[in-house]
Image 1 (cartoon, one colour):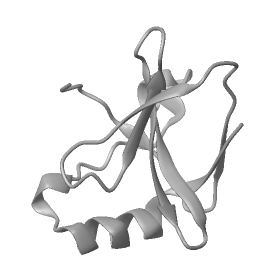
Image 2 (image 1 turned 30 degrees about the vertical axis):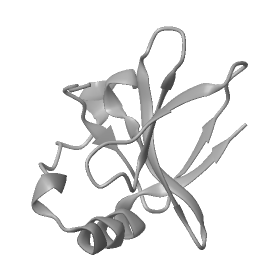
Image 3 (image 1 turned 90 degrees about the vertical axis):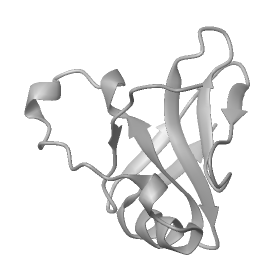
Image 4 (image 1 turned 120 degrees about the vertical axis):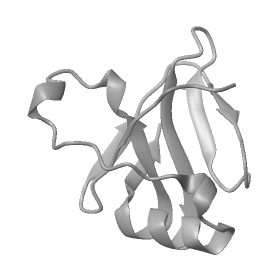
Length: 100
C-alpha cells in the first residue's frame, strides 16, 4: 500500500505506543522495517526496526498537532540506500520505541 507519509524522529527521543488492540504490521521493500498501523482504521502510526540495543523507529508526522512548530522536513529516499545503509541511518536518527 503506497502512502504519502513523512516521518518524525529524534535520536535522543522516546516514543511510547499504547494500543488497546493489537496493531497491524506490514513490511515493504527490504522488509527490514515494520510499519505499524491501526488494525481498525489502517492509519499508519510508525515505522520500527529491532536493533540489539532495542526497538527504534519514527512516527508518522501527520499525526502530530502543531506541525508549524516542527523543523522543516529532510527528504530521504530509502529506495536509494542498500540494506546496510538503511540500518545504519535508522540506528543513527530513529528514536527509541516501546509498544505497550
